[in-house]
Length: 86
Image 1 (cartoon, rainbow, N blue to C red):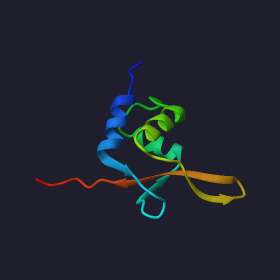
Image 2 (cartoon, rainbow, N blue to C red):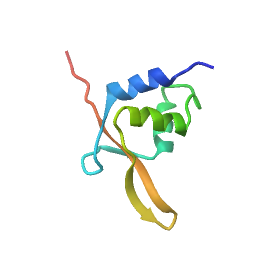
Image 3 (cartoon, one colour):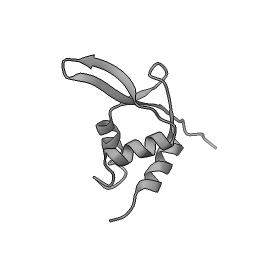
């Protein structure tokens, strides 16, 4: 099995930065982040444990989003970095 931790870490670092819930343009659950990543990387190449380690190593903190009948909802908050044109 190929270790995709470094390429995924680089992908996140190059395309997003950590944010607060108030300023984020993306608030995603761990499952939603994995779905996004699996559009570019092999499905199931990382799990939620790996994702947590990658995101926290990049300075992300899980944020409380809401509480409903299913309990507390936790999200990761991202600001998408705009591509610069040459």
